[in-house]
Amino acid sequence: MLLVGIWNGGFSDESVANSNLHVMRFLGLCLEDDVPDHFILSRFRTRLTIARAWDGLLEKINHPNRDDESDAQTAMRVIEVIQPVVDTEARWLKKNDKSVFGYKQHTLFNNNGLVLAVETTGANCHDSKPLPLRQLQRNHLITKVRYVVERTFGSKILRYCGLAKVHAWHILQAMAYNLKRLPKLYSDQSSKNQNL
Image 1 (cartoon, one colour):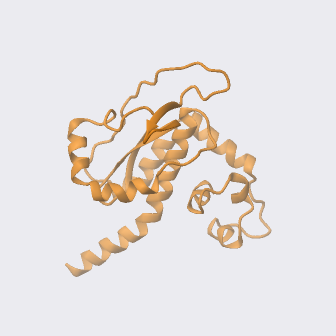
Image 2 (spheres, helix red, strand yellow):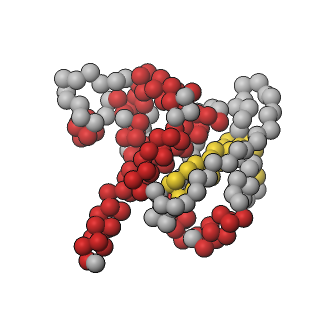
Image 3 (cartoon, one colour):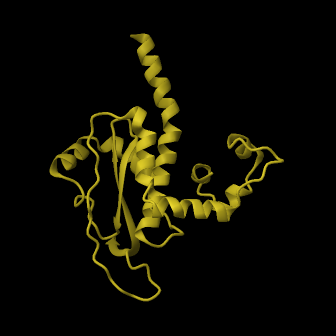
């Protein structure tokens, strides 16, 4: 249900729970079934966040399509700023003379454009900091492929505070993106194999 919310333009948990018949059928639910409400969805997402399970879920989705690329799990140090009633893990960034407060999503993907790993940092972390030199050189070579993925994850206003919750949202987006792309990739690969 969380993935359906993303596939449908970022439905809130409440909207997913009360969505249309097509969505209910996709989820395997009948009109007579009890549909989980938005509290259950929120608690489920929170439990996965606390258990730090999101990265593992993305890895499971990518497992059948893994190539030889290394994981991009990089430890990031975030300088803590204590301010009341403010997300203490978010950071300020000035871009095109506009100040933005929030987080940045760093994404590693393969040649098929599937997301392999996601790192979430404060907005002030430059894109090159989580990446080794070899990865920076590779990114330069695949700029056109990167564009397809990056425009999907463009800047959005999130409803979540805290690095762990924002990272969970980023991983959920990556999972939804990969699952949406996989059928076409498998179909294209099957056609290519038949032509050989």
